Picture 1 (spheres, one colour):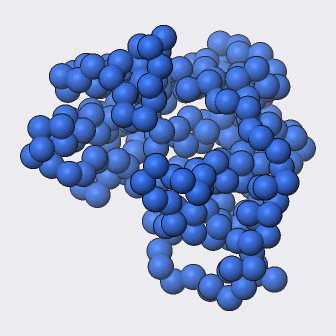
Picture 2 (picture 1 turned 90 degrees about the vertical axis):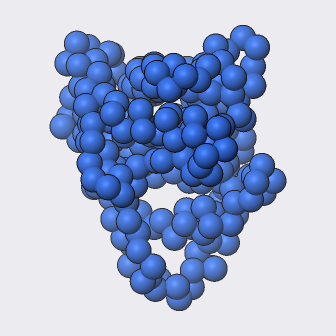
Picture 3 (picture 1 turned 45 degrees about the horizontal axis):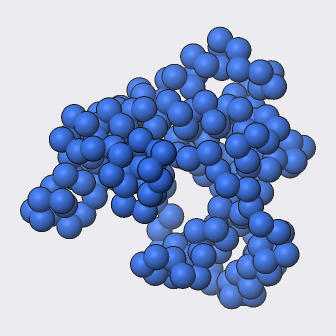
Amino acid sequence: MKKPVPFYSGEYAAKGNIEYENMLYWARSVRSGDPDNYEGRAAAYYWKNVFPKKIEFFRGRDGNPPNNLLNYGYAILRAIVARGLVCSGLLPTLGIHHRNKYNAYCLADDIMEPYRPYVDQIVLRIIDKGENFLELGNSIKTQLLGIATVDVQFERGKSPLMVGLQSTTFSLAKCYEESSRKITYPTIMNFGSKRNHRNENEFIQTCEEEYRTAGDEEDLPF
């Protein structure tokens, strides 16, 4: 059995040691449109392991805390992304994958996805400090509002998340103009290429079997 490696969300290391090779495998294997539902598998595995086991966490819009913290943090992030899109001359309503006539922020919901872990990072820190997260008190709201100034790492250096998001939305506008083919996103962690692949397929198969028997996930709020 392989020795577990630290699991990271942004720059924050969770206390438990969580295997992540299956996540990398799913990321490498995903195809356009995700016909094999690798995103769903990764989400199920991620939410099962991201928080301490004592919380017995299940991700859902109306789920038990700390879902309330995640919902609040994602709403703030969504607003920051929408602001960045407008500043880059784009309409947040016109999404790429998210399509809903009742949703005025479809494009924001598309673009915010890789930034979600920075919210998770703040929530993990709140839990780790032993704060009461059953209700959204002023202290917790203040910490979640700080998402705008969290440092994010790009290839050319660090910047506050709000500034980095402007780079992301500007790069998307360039893609629409056909002057670029790459959206600029921050690098959360460099996993590297030197890993022990012994028994990796067996481990991945076990995780996928666990995912298949876990049941359907609730729709997330965004």
